[in-house]
Image 1 (tube, one colour):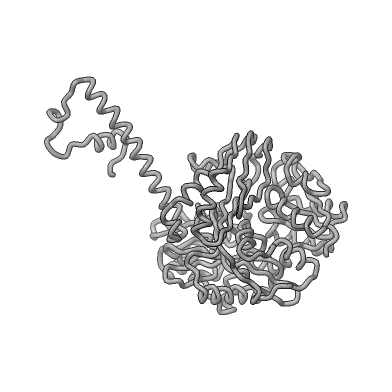
Image 2: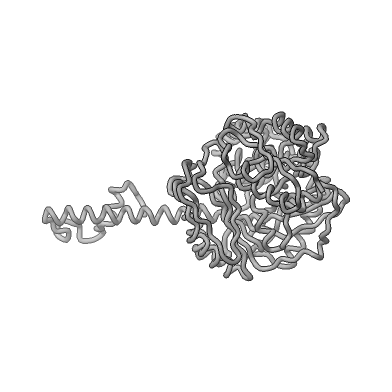
Length: 499
Protein backbone atom coordinates (compact mmCIF):
# COMPACT_ATOMS: atom_id res chain seq x y z
CA UNK A 1 0.00 0.00 0.00
CA UNK A 2 1.09 3.60 -0.59
CA UNK A 3 3.12 5.15 2.23
CA UNK A 4 2.01 8.79 1.86
CA UNK A 5 -0.39 10.57 -0.53
CA UNK A 6 -0.62 14.24 -1.48
CA UNK A 7 -4.13 15.41 -2.41
CA UNK A 8 -3.74 18.23 -4.94
CA UNK A 9 -7.23 19.71 -4.71
CA UNK A 10 -9.64 21.52 -2.39
CA UNK A 11 -13.24 21.44 -1.16
CA UNK A 12 -15.42 18.38 -0.87
CA UNK A 13 -13.39 16.18 -3.22
CA UNK A 14 -10.18 16.79 -1.25
CA UNK A 15 -11.97 15.79 1.95
CA UNK A 16 -13.43 12.71 0.23
CA UNK A 17 -10.00 11.47 -0.88
CA UNK A 18 -8.39 12.27 2.47
CA UNK A 19 -11.03 10.19 4.26
CA UNK A 20 -10.39 7.19 2.00
CA UNK A 21 -6.65 7.47 2.72
CA UNK A 22 -7.28 7.63 6.46
CA UNK A 23 -9.43 4.49 6.38
CA UNK A 24 -6.61 2.68 4.58
CA UNK A 25 -4.08 3.96 7.10
CA UNK A 26 -2.23 6.13 4.57
CA UNK A 27 -0.68 9.40 5.92
CA UNK A 28 -1.85 12.44 3.95
CA UNK A 29 -0.60 15.78 2.68
CA UNK A 30 -2.59 18.56 1.06
CA UNK A 31 -1.98 22.00 -0.42
CA UNK A 32 -3.99 25.20 -0.12
CA UNK A 33 -4.16 28.76 -1.37
CA UNK A 34 -4.21 31.84 0.82
CA UNK A 35 -8.01 31.93 0.48
CA UNK A 36 -8.25 28.36 1.80
CA UNK A 37 -6.03 28.74 4.85
CA UNK A 38 -8.94 27.73 7.12
CA UNK A 39 -10.65 25.35 4.70
CA UNK A 40 -11.85 21.93 5.81
CA UNK A 41 -9.35 19.96 3.76
CA UNK A 42 -6.41 21.77 5.40
CA UNK A 43 -7.73 20.75 8.81
CA UNK A 44 -8.33 17.14 7.83
CA UNK A 45 -4.95 16.31 6.28
CA UNK A 46 -1.97 15.23 8.40
CA UNK A 47 0.14 17.92 6.74
CA UNK A 48 -0.90 21.04 4.83
CA UNK A 49 1.23 23.47 2.80
CA UNK A 50 0.33 26.89 1.45
CA UNK A 51 1.31 27.22 -2.21
CA UNK A 52 0.18 30.65 -3.37
CA UNK A 53 -2.42 33.42 -3.74
CA UNK A 54 -6.13 32.65 -4.25
CA UNK A 55 -6.31 32.57 -8.09
CA UNK A 56 -5.93 28.92 -9.23
CA UNK A 57 -3.31 29.87 -11.81
CA UNK A 58 -1.12 31.00 -8.90
CA UNK A 59 -1.83 28.09 -6.57
CA UNK A 60 -3.79 24.93 -7.40
CA UNK A 61 -2.53 24.97 -11.00
CA UNK A 62 1.14 25.57 -10.08
CA UNK A 63 2.65 22.22 -11.01
CA UNK A 64 6.16 23.11 -9.85
CA UNK A 65 4.95 24.08 -6.37
CA UNK A 66 2.84 20.94 -5.98
CA UNK A 67 5.76 18.72 -7.01
CA UNK A 68 7.99 20.64 -4.61
CA UNK A 69 5.57 19.96 -1.72
CA UNK A 70 5.37 16.27 -2.66
CA UNK A 71 9.15 15.96 -2.48
CA UNK A 72 9.46 18.03 0.68
CA UNK A 73 6.78 16.03 2.50
CA UNK A 74 7.92 12.65 1.24
CA UNK A 75 4.64 11.89 -0.55
CA UNK A 76 5.17 9.10 -3.06
CA UNK A 77 1.86 9.64 -4.86
CA UNK A 78 -0.48 12.49 -5.84
CA UNK A 79 -4.27 12.24 -6.14
CA UNK A 80 -5.57 15.12 -8.33
CA UNK A 81 -9.28 14.75 -7.49
CA UNK A 82 -11.29 16.30 -10.34
CA UNK A 83 -10.94 19.67 -12.01
CA UNK A 84 -7.70 21.68 -11.75
CA UNK A 85 -4.88 19.31 -12.86
CA UNK A 86 -6.83 16.03 -12.91
CA UNK A 87 -6.75 15.72 -16.71
CA UNK A 88 -3.57 17.70 -17.37
CA UNK A 89 -1.20 15.66 -19.51
CA UNK A 90 1.84 17.73 -18.56
CA UNK A 91 1.14 17.26 -14.84
CA UNK A 92 0.93 13.48 -15.26
CA UNK A 93 4.13 13.53 -17.34
CA UNK A 94 5.90 15.61 -14.69
CA UNK A 95 4.87 13.18 -11.95
CA UNK A 96 6.18 10.30 -14.04
CA UNK A 97 9.51 12.03 -14.69
CA UNK A 98 9.90 12.80 -10.95
CA UNK A 99 9.09 9.19 -9.97
CA UNK A 100 5.90 10.28 -8.22
CA UNK A 101 2.86 8.05 -8.69
CA UNK A 102 0.00 9.85 -10.42
CA UNK A 103 -3.23 8.32 -9.10
CA UNK A 104 -5.01 8.01 -12.40
CA UNK A 105 -4.19 6.85 -15.92
CA UNK A 106 -0.77 7.37 -17.48
CA UNK A 107 -0.01 10.53 -19.45
CA UNK A 108 -0.37 8.78 -22.82
CA UNK A 109 -3.96 7.74 -22.08
CA UNK A 110 -4.83 11.21 -20.79
CA UNK A 111 -3.41 12.79 -23.93
CA UNK A 112 -5.22 10.39 -26.24
CA UNK A 113 -8.61 10.60 -24.55
CA UNK A 114 -8.35 14.28 -23.64
CA UNK A 115 -8.23 15.14 -27.33
CA UNK A 116 -11.80 14.55 -28.42
CA UNK A 117 -10.87 14.16 -32.11
CA UNK A 118 -8.20 11.55 -31.41
CA UNK A 119 -10.57 9.77 -29.02
CA UNK A 120 -13.20 9.57 -31.79
CA UNK A 121 -10.64 8.10 -34.18
CA UNK A 122 -9.59 5.51 -31.60
CA UNK A 123 -13.18 4.47 -30.90
CA UNK A 124 -14.07 4.23 -34.58
CA UNK A 125 -11.01 2.03 -35.06
CA UNK A 126 -12.28 -0.23 -32.28
CA UNK A 127 -15.72 -0.48 -33.99
CA UNK A 128 -17.38 1.48 -31.18
CA UNK A 129 -20.43 3.52 -32.29
CA UNK A 130 -19.76 7.26 -32.32
CA UNK A 131 -22.04 10.15 -33.16
CA UNK A 132 -21.62 11.08 -36.86
CA UNK A 133 -19.26 14.02 -37.26
CA UNK A 134 -15.75 15.16 -38.14
CA UNK A 135 -12.61 13.15 -37.45
CA UNK A 136 -10.19 15.92 -38.37
CA UNK A 137 -9.31 19.27 -36.82
CA UNK A 138 -11.40 21.99 -38.41
CA UNK A 139 -9.50 25.21 -38.99
CA UNK A 140 -11.85 27.21 -41.22
CA UNK A 141 -15.54 27.63 -42.01
CA UNK A 142 -15.49 26.14 -45.52
CA UNK A 143 -13.92 22.94 -44.20
CA UNK A 144 -16.54 22.73 -41.45
CA UNK A 145 -19.40 23.28 -43.90
CA UNK A 146 -18.36 20.18 -45.86
CA UNK A 147 -18.93 18.12 -42.71
CA UNK A 148 -22.32 19.78 -42.14
CA UNK A 149 -23.36 19.04 -45.74
CA UNK A 150 -22.62 15.37 -45.04
CA UNK A 151 -24.38 14.96 -41.65
CA UNK A 152 -27.02 17.72 -41.86
CA UNK A 153 -28.43 20.13 -39.26
CA UNK A 154 -28.83 20.33 -36.30
CA UNK A 155 -25.18 20.05 -35.32
CA UNK A 156 -22.98 20.56 -32.27
CA UNK A 157 -19.77 22.56 -32.54
CA UNK A 158 -17.42 21.34 -29.79
CA UNK A 159 -13.97 22.22 -28.49
CA UNK A 160 -11.49 19.40 -29.11
CA UNK A 161 -9.69 20.04 -25.82
CA UNK A 162 -12.82 20.95 -23.91
CA UNK A 163 -15.27 19.85 -21.30
CA UNK A 164 -18.06 21.20 -19.12
CA UNK A 165 -19.89 22.71 -22.10
CA UNK A 166 -17.23 25.34 -22.84
CA UNK A 167 -16.66 25.98 -26.53
CA UNK A 168 -19.91 24.20 -27.38
CA UNK A 169 -22.70 25.53 -29.59
CA UNK A 170 -25.87 24.04 -31.07
CA UNK A 171 -26.56 25.21 -34.64
CA UNK A 172 -29.91 24.46 -36.24
CA UNK A 173 -29.63 26.38 -39.53
CA UNK A 174 -26.95 27.59 -41.93
CA UNK A 175 -27.51 31.27 -41.17
CA UNK A 176 -26.31 30.74 -37.58
CA UNK A 177 -23.25 28.72 -38.53
CA UNK A 178 -20.55 31.37 -39.15
CA UNK A 179 -21.27 33.25 -35.95
CA UNK A 180 -21.42 30.03 -33.88
CA UNK A 181 -18.01 28.91 -35.24
CA UNK A 182 -16.44 32.21 -34.17
CA UNK A 183 -18.01 32.07 -30.71
CA UNK A 184 -17.01 28.44 -30.12
CA UNK A 185 -13.39 28.89 -31.22
CA UNK A 186 -13.03 32.07 -29.18
CA UNK A 187 -14.43 30.44 -26.04
CA UNK A 188 -12.31 27.31 -26.55
CA UNK A 189 -9.15 29.42 -26.94
CA UNK A 190 -9.97 31.35 -23.78
CA UNK A 191 -10.90 28.30 -21.66
CA UNK A 192 -8.32 25.76 -22.84
CA UNK A 193 -5.66 27.68 -24.77
CA UNK A 194 -6.66 25.63 -27.83
CA UNK A 195 -9.17 26.87 -30.41
CA UNK A 196 -9.46 23.56 -32.29
CA UNK A 197 -13.06 22.47 -32.84
CA UNK A 198 -14.92 19.54 -34.31
CA UNK A 199 -18.52 18.91 -35.32
CA UNK A 200 -21.02 16.25 -34.30
CA UNK A 201 -24.58 15.57 -35.31
CA UNK A 202 -26.87 16.95 -32.60
CA UNK A 203 -29.12 14.21 -31.26
CA UNK A 204 -32.59 15.48 -30.42
CA UNK A 205 -33.80 14.79 -26.86
CA UNK A 206 -31.04 12.32 -25.91
CA UNK A 207 -30.25 10.77 -22.54
CA UNK A 208 -26.73 11.15 -21.11
CA UNK A 209 -25.64 7.85 -19.57
CA UNK A 210 -22.15 7.01 -18.34
CA UNK A 211 -20.43 3.81 -17.19
CA UNK A 212 -17.96 3.74 -14.32
CA UNK A 213 -14.93 1.57 -15.05
CA UNK A 214 -11.96 0.25 -13.05
CA UNK A 215 -8.81 -1.10 -14.68
CA UNK A 216 -5.70 -2.40 -12.91
CA UNK A 217 -2.14 -2.57 -14.26
CA UNK A 218 -2.49 -6.24 -15.21
CA UNK A 219 -5.17 -5.97 -17.88
CA UNK A 220 -8.16 -6.66 -15.61
CA UNK A 221 -11.09 -4.36 -16.34
CA UNK A 222 -14.62 -4.15 -14.97
CA UNK A 223 -17.54 -1.74 -15.14
CA UNK A 224 -19.72 -0.82 -12.17
CA UNK A 225 -22.93 -0.15 -14.06
CA UNK A 226 -24.41 3.09 -15.27
CA UNK A 227 -25.27 6.54 -13.99
CA UNK A 228 -28.04 8.65 -15.50
CA UNK A 229 -26.75 12.22 -15.94
CA UNK A 230 -29.38 13.82 -18.18
CA UNK A 231 -30.44 16.55 -15.71
CA UNK A 232 -28.10 19.25 -17.00
CA UNK A 233 -27.94 22.99 -17.38
CA UNK A 234 -25.63 24.32 -20.09
CA UNK A 235 -24.04 20.87 -20.31
CA UNK A 236 -23.24 20.87 -16.58
CA UNK A 237 -24.68 17.93 -14.67
CA UNK A 238 -26.90 18.84 -11.71
CA UNK A 239 -28.65 15.63 -10.64
CA UNK A 240 -27.44 12.06 -11.18
CA UNK A 241 -28.95 8.70 -10.37
CA UNK A 242 -28.30 4.98 -10.62
CA UNK A 243 -29.67 2.84 -12.05
CA UNK A 244 -30.99 4.75 -15.05
CA UNK A 245 -34.81 4.71 -15.33
CA UNK A 246 -34.54 3.51 -18.95
CA UNK A 247 -32.01 0.73 -18.35
CA UNK A 248 -32.76 -2.92 -18.99
CA UNK A 249 -30.54 -5.87 -18.15
CA UNK A 250 -29.85 -6.43 -21.85
CA UNK A 251 -29.00 -2.78 -22.59
CA UNK A 252 -26.73 -2.56 -19.51
CA UNK A 253 -24.82 -5.65 -20.58
CA UNK A 254 -24.44 -4.34 -24.13
CA UNK A 255 -23.32 -0.82 -23.11
CA UNK A 256 -21.02 -2.21 -20.42
CA UNK A 257 -19.21 -4.40 -22.93
CA UNK A 258 -18.74 -1.44 -25.27
CA UNK A 259 -17.42 0.69 -22.37
CA UNK A 260 -14.80 -1.96 -21.58
CA UNK A 261 -13.87 -2.20 -25.26
CA UNK A 262 -13.30 1.57 -25.26
CA UNK A 263 -11.04 1.24 -22.23
CA UNK A 264 -8.93 -1.51 -23.76
CA UNK A 265 -8.63 0.37 -27.06
CA UNK A 266 -7.04 3.33 -25.27
CA UNK A 267 -4.68 1.45 -22.94
CA UNK A 268 -6.40 2.95 -19.90
CA UNK A 269 -5.73 2.13 -16.23
CA UNK A 270 -7.23 3.17 -12.86
CA UNK A 271 -10.76 4.65 -12.51
CA UNK A 272 -12.53 6.42 -15.36
CA UNK A 273 -15.88 7.00 -16.97
CA UNK A 274 -17.10 6.20 -20.48
CA UNK A 275 -19.92 8.55 -21.47
CA UNK A 276 -22.65 7.80 -23.99
CA UNK A 277 -25.55 9.62 -25.61
CA UNK A 278 -28.69 7.50 -25.99
CA UNK A 279 -31.40 8.46 -28.47
CA UNK A 280 -35.15 7.89 -27.96
CA UNK A 281 -34.89 4.56 -29.83
CA UNK A 282 -32.22 3.39 -27.30
CA UNK A 283 -29.39 3.57 -29.84
CA UNK A 284 -26.25 4.63 -27.99
CA UNK A 285 -23.10 6.41 -29.11
CA UNK A 286 -19.70 7.03 -27.52
CA UNK A 287 -19.47 10.65 -26.38
CA UNK A 288 -16.17 10.90 -24.51
CA UNK A 289 -14.14 9.40 -21.72
CA UNK A 290 -13.32 11.24 -18.51
CA UNK A 291 -9.85 10.25 -17.37
CA UNK A 292 -10.43 10.97 -13.70
CA UNK A 293 -12.72 10.47 -10.75
CA UNK A 294 -16.18 11.89 -11.49
CA UNK A 295 -18.08 14.31 -9.25
CA UNK A 296 -20.95 11.83 -9.21
CA UNK A 297 -18.91 8.72 -8.31
CA UNK A 298 -20.67 8.27 -4.90
CA UNK A 299 -23.92 7.39 -6.73
CA UNK A 300 -22.25 4.23 -7.98
CA UNK A 301 -20.68 3.55 -4.60
CA UNK A 302 -24.11 3.55 -2.96
CA UNK A 303 -25.65 1.00 -5.33
CA UNK A 304 -22.62 -1.30 -5.61
CA UNK A 305 -21.04 -1.02 -2.15
CA UNK A 306 -17.63 -0.47 -3.81
CA UNK A 307 -15.43 2.39 -2.61
CA UNK A 308 -14.07 3.78 -5.88
CA UNK A 309 -11.46 6.05 -4.28
CA UNK A 310 -10.02 3.15 -2.28
CA UNK A 311 -9.88 1.11 -5.46
CA UNK A 312 -7.96 3.95 -7.11
CA UNK A 313 -5.43 3.94 -4.29
CA UNK A 314 -5.05 0.16 -4.41
CA UNK A 315 -4.54 0.14 -8.18
CA UNK A 316 -1.96 2.94 -7.90
CA UNK A 317 -0.08 0.91 -5.27
CA UNK A 318 0.21 -1.98 -7.73
CA UNK A 319 -2.52 -4.26 -6.43
CA UNK A 320 -4.64 -6.25 -8.89
CA UNK A 321 -8.41 -5.82 -8.89
CA UNK A 322 -10.01 -8.00 -6.23
CA UNK A 323 -13.41 -7.63 -7.87
CA UNK A 324 -14.56 -9.56 -10.93
CA UNK A 325 -17.34 -8.48 -13.28
CA UNK A 326 -19.63 -11.24 -11.99
CA UNK A 327 -19.20 -9.84 -8.46
CA UNK A 328 -20.72 -6.46 -9.41
CA UNK A 329 -24.37 -6.09 -8.46
CA UNK A 330 -26.59 -3.02 -8.32
CA UNK A 331 -28.76 -2.88 -5.21
CA UNK A 332 -31.56 -0.35 -4.75
CA UNK A 333 -31.46 3.19 -6.14
CA UNK A 334 -29.30 6.23 -5.44
CA UNK A 335 -29.70 9.92 -6.34
CA UNK A 336 -27.23 12.80 -6.05
CA UNK A 337 -27.98 16.53 -5.99
CA UNK A 338 -25.02 18.85 -6.50
CA UNK A 339 -25.22 21.70 -3.99
CA UNK A 340 -23.59 24.83 -5.39
CA UNK A 341 -23.15 28.34 -4.02
CA UNK A 342 -25.37 29.84 -6.70
CA UNK A 343 -28.59 31.84 -6.85
CA UNK A 344 -31.11 29.88 -8.96
CA UNK A 345 -33.46 32.88 -8.88
CA UNK A 346 -30.78 35.05 -10.51
CA UNK A 347 -29.63 32.95 -13.46
CA UNK A 348 -27.46 30.79 -11.17
CA UNK A 349 -25.04 33.61 -10.46
CA UNK A 350 -22.28 32.65 -7.98
CA UNK A 351 -23.03 33.48 -4.36
CA UNK A 352 -20.16 34.23 -2.01
CA UNK A 353 -20.00 35.16 1.67
CA UNK A 354 -19.85 33.61 5.11
CA UNK A 355 -21.96 30.57 6.01
CA UNK A 356 -23.80 31.76 9.10
CA UNK A 357 -25.74 28.54 9.74
CA UNK A 358 -25.27 24.99 8.51
CA UNK A 359 -27.62 22.09 9.26
CA UNK A 360 -26.88 18.95 7.26
CA UNK A 361 -29.56 16.28 6.75
CA UNK A 362 -29.15 12.85 8.26
CA UNK A 363 -31.05 9.66 8.94
CA UNK A 364 -31.16 6.34 7.11
CA UNK A 365 -29.72 6.28 3.59
CA UNK A 366 -28.45 9.88 3.55
CA UNK A 367 -24.86 10.83 2.67
CA UNK A 368 -23.35 14.33 2.51
CA UNK A 369 -20.02 15.01 0.80
CA UNK A 370 -19.05 18.49 1.94
CA UNK A 371 -16.15 20.90 2.03
CA UNK A 372 -17.83 23.58 4.16
CA UNK A 373 -18.64 24.33 7.80
CA UNK A 374 -20.47 27.00 9.77
CA UNK A 375 -18.41 30.19 9.65
CA UNK A 376 -16.59 29.24 6.43
CA UNK A 377 -16.19 32.03 3.90
CA UNK A 378 -17.05 30.95 0.36
CA UNK A 379 -14.33 32.40 -1.91
CA UNK A 380 -15.09 33.78 -5.35
CA UNK A 381 -12.09 32.18 -7.07
CA UNK A 382 -13.26 28.58 -7.44
CA UNK A 383 -16.00 26.35 -8.78
CA UNK A 384 -19.27 27.00 -6.87
CA UNK A 385 -19.80 23.32 -5.99
CA UNK A 386 -19.64 23.17 -2.18
CA UNK A 387 -21.31 19.86 -1.35
CA UNK A 388 -23.14 16.84 -2.70
CA UNK A 389 -26.26 15.38 -1.16
CA UNK A 390 -26.87 11.70 -1.83
CA UNK A 391 -29.56 9.26 -0.82
CA UNK A 392 -30.02 5.49 -1.19
CA UNK A 393 -33.22 3.46 -0.84
CA UNK A 394 -34.46 0.02 -1.91
CA UNK A 395 -36.52 1.50 -4.78
CA UNK A 396 -36.36 4.62 -6.94
CA UNK A 397 -39.66 5.88 -5.57
CA UNK A 398 -38.38 5.59 -2.01
CA UNK A 399 -35.12 7.30 -3.01
CA UNK A 400 -37.05 10.26 -4.43
CA UNK A 401 -39.09 10.54 -1.22
CA UNK A 402 -35.91 10.33 0.84
CA UNK A 403 -34.20 13.02 -1.24
CA UNK A 404 -37.25 15.26 -0.83
CA UNK A 405 -37.03 14.82 2.92
CA UNK A 406 -33.26 15.37 3.01
CA UNK A 407 -33.47 18.56 0.95
CA UNK A 408 -36.10 19.93 3.32
CA UNK A 409 -33.69 19.35 6.25
CA UNK A 410 -30.67 20.92 4.53
CA UNK A 411 -30.15 24.49 5.84
CA UNK A 412 -27.33 26.72 4.58
CA UNK A 413 -27.67 30.36 5.66
CA UNK A 414 -25.56 33.36 4.66
CA UNK A 415 -25.32 32.47 0.97
CA UNK A 416 -27.67 31.38 -1.80
CA UNK A 417 -27.59 27.73 -2.87
CA UNK A 418 -29.27 25.49 -5.41
CA UNK A 419 -31.31 23.64 -2.78
CA UNK A 420 -34.66 25.27 -3.77
CA UNK A 421 -33.94 24.42 -7.41
CA UNK A 422 -33.30 20.76 -6.54
CA UNK A 423 -36.56 20.64 -4.60
CA UNK A 424 -38.39 21.66 -7.78
CA UNK A 425 -36.59 19.02 -9.83
CA UNK A 426 -37.33 16.20 -7.37
CA UNK A 427 -41.02 17.14 -7.24
CA UNK A 428 -41.38 17.44 -11.02
CA UNK A 429 -43.84 14.81 -12.35
CA UNK A 430 -41.64 13.99 -15.36
CA UNK A 431 -38.64 13.36 -13.12
CA UNK A 432 -40.73 11.20 -10.79
CA UNK A 433 -41.86 9.11 -13.79
CA UNK A 434 -38.28 8.89 -15.10
CA UNK A 435 -39.42 10.54 -18.33
CA UNK A 436 -36.71 13.10 -18.98
CA UNK A 437 -33.70 13.83 -21.19
CA UNK A 438 -31.00 16.49 -21.54
CA UNK A 439 -33.63 19.12 -22.45
CA UNK A 440 -35.40 18.71 -19.07
CA UNK A 441 -33.99 21.85 -17.42
CA UNK A 442 -34.69 24.07 -20.42
CA UNK A 443 -38.28 22.88 -20.48
CA UNK A 444 -38.67 23.22 -16.72
CA UNK A 445 -37.30 26.74 -16.71
CA UNK A 446 -39.47 27.69 -19.66
CA UNK A 447 -42.52 26.59 -17.68
CA UNK A 448 -41.24 28.42 -14.59
CA UNK A 449 -40.74 31.59 -16.62
CA UNK A 450 -44.29 31.41 -17.98
CA UNK A 451 -45.65 30.78 -14.50
CA UNK A 452 -43.70 33.75 -13.12
CA UNK A 453 -44.89 35.95 -15.99
CA UNK A 454 -48.49 34.94 -15.33
CA UNK A 455 -48.12 35.97 -11.69
CA UNK A 456 -46.73 39.33 -12.81
CA UNK A 457 -49.61 39.81 -15.23
CA UNK A 458 -52.11 38.93 -12.49
CA UNK A 459 -50.58 41.61 -10.31
CA UNK A 460 -50.80 44.19 -13.11
CA UNK A 461 -54.39 43.14 -13.76
CA UNK A 462 -55.26 43.83 -10.13
CA UNK A 463 -53.69 47.29 -10.35
CA UNK A 464 -55.57 48.15 -13.56
CA UNK A 465 -58.85 46.87 -12.13
CA UNK A 466 -58.30 48.93 -9.00
CA UNK A 467 -57.58 52.07 -11.04
CA UNK A 468 -60.68 51.54 -13.17
CA UNK A 469 -62.74 51.08 -10.02
CA UNK A 470 -61.35 54.20 -8.39
CA UNK A 471 -62.14 56.27 -11.47
CA UNK A 472 -65.64 54.74 -11.51
CA UNK A 473 -65.14 53.55 -15.06
CA UNK A 474 -67.47 50.78 -16.08
CA UNK A 475 -65.54 48.13 -17.90
CA UNK A 476 -68.62 46.70 -19.52
CA UNK A 477 -69.64 50.10 -20.97
CA UNK A 478 -66.19 51.30 -22.08
CA UNK A 479 -64.84 48.05 -23.43
CA UNK A 480 -65.66 46.43 -26.79
CA UNK A 481 -68.48 43.89 -26.59
CA UNK A 482 -66.14 41.04 -27.51
CA UNK A 483 -62.44 40.29 -27.22
CA UNK A 484 -61.85 42.52 -24.19
CA UNK A 485 -59.77 41.10 -21.38
CA UNK A 486 -57.98 42.67 -18.46
CA UNK A 487 -55.56 39.71 -18.75
CA UNK A 488 -54.65 40.73 -22.33
CA UNK A 489 -54.45 44.38 -21.35
CA UNK A 490 -52.10 43.49 -18.52
CA UNK A 491 -50.03 41.40 -20.91
CA UNK A 492 -49.62 44.41 -23.17
CA UNK A 493 -48.64 46.49 -20.16
CA UNK A 494 -46.03 43.84 -19.32
CA UNK A 495 -44.64 44.07 -22.83
CA UNK A 496 -45.85 40.63 -23.96
CA UNK A 497 -47.32 40.27 -27.42
CA UNK A 498 -48.47 36.68 -27.18
CA UNK A 499 -49.63 34.41 -24.42
